[in-house]
Image (cartoon, rainbow, N blue to C red; front, side):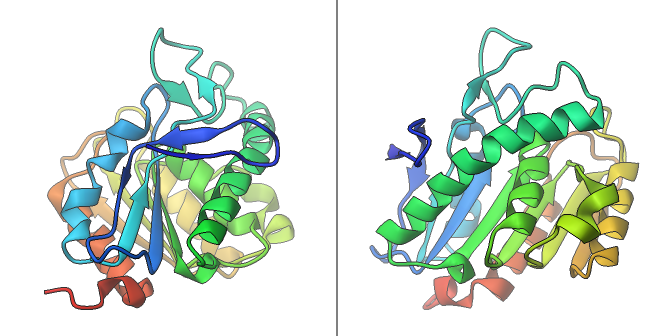
Length: 230
């Protein structure tokens, strides 16, 4: 269990997968969807770790109990899905998550150039908002089955422009498939290199093809983590 206490005093913690080499040269942080927790996404790590032996994987639990279920965590409330309300909720989470990321990098002697954020659903919303507003660009952002909040003001608010990969199932009943194209358009309009991958027949989830695309993105932008990989 990795626990990091940001400056706000509220800790984020969750499961981790240590680098096979013993020393992390890169950090991949996995952000879960609403009603889940870090255990839900740490399962992605073994699929990628064999090819990224010098990467450490962290999957923190969201800072709040899920307010729509008796279990799980959330990054912000989705009871009111008005864009302005969701964005306001995410603004509360940003300093908590940024504190977690800053401390995790510092403890390992790493920088944002060694960091990739991977999100699913609400975790994609959180990953994108966080990465695009950090003072220094991270290495990459991968977003599965998610959406972009704050698109109308992104060109004004953006600080960093890390490369982004968005993957979305065409049959997603939770987050509309059209959200991927809308996010990509806004990202590209703000100068972000955004790739997309549509998955025919996939609902709200991650399939093997999406995992392969995610791995390729990580290997391309975190080459220091792939040293010695087969």
